[in-house]
Picture 1 (spheres, rainbow, N blue to C red):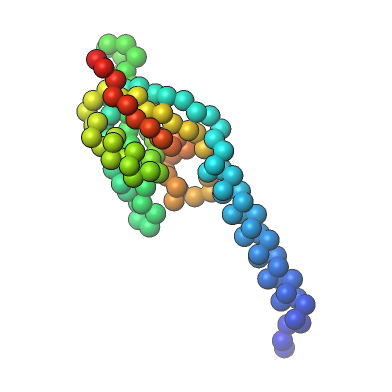
Picture 2: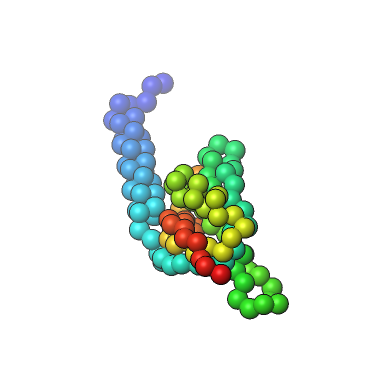
Length: 124
């Protein structure tokens, strides 16, 4: 028994609308940041990882006071040029400028919600 043509059209229209809403939500989550800021510390590592969606993932060690336990700031980088600049600064004290994007639908954009947009070397 074949399905009526109007039923198939309705299903196709539903799929198109849901896909458009998902695409619009993803675009909005990527282009509007929840917060922006800067964090300073020692660059510990930066690596490109992922099975299907490769992303740059890094770790910054934040040390507030000598003798205090360091806090780690985990971040993602979407721009290969920024990742190359960060890679040159591993082991040095840097300041990272970041944007926080909450609610991204997958980890294909990065493992964290913090996306670094710039890096600068901090004098000791």
